[in-house]
Length: 192
Image (cartoon, rainbow, N blue to C red; front, side, top):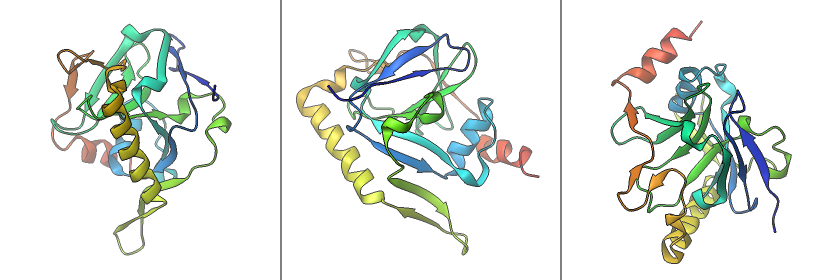
């Protein structure tokens, strides 16, 4: 069996395990919505450092306690779902809205020791001097994501998700869609 790493929310009410390390991609994201999500949920502004996630599939995530404490929000009606702890607000995961596409990204700041995840292999939305964005190691990230989603669909593992009711295809918690412009408002309040 491949390595497992425990994760938890800030207060420890939600406890879980990420298993089968190696079936994913350790990535750093510099996008404005990930930065705003951290600030919105009470974490420090990551600024130019970006946030790190481990992208995998939902069947590799299990909860030992506190699964009933999951809450979910989104920055728009079609945007990523951002799962957090209702007990302490800690941001835990990102998922797509369609559970048939096996994808979950665990925020690595919820792992005491992320060493087993290996080094960051991909970086996305890196701000460039010309105002544009660039990516590093993005091809393996995208191919891996598509491959894992395809395997999940073919094998039926997409149904092994703690985030969705696979009969109704609805999230296990009601999605709070934040108002349009919330990312800009959050970032404006946190710009020196």
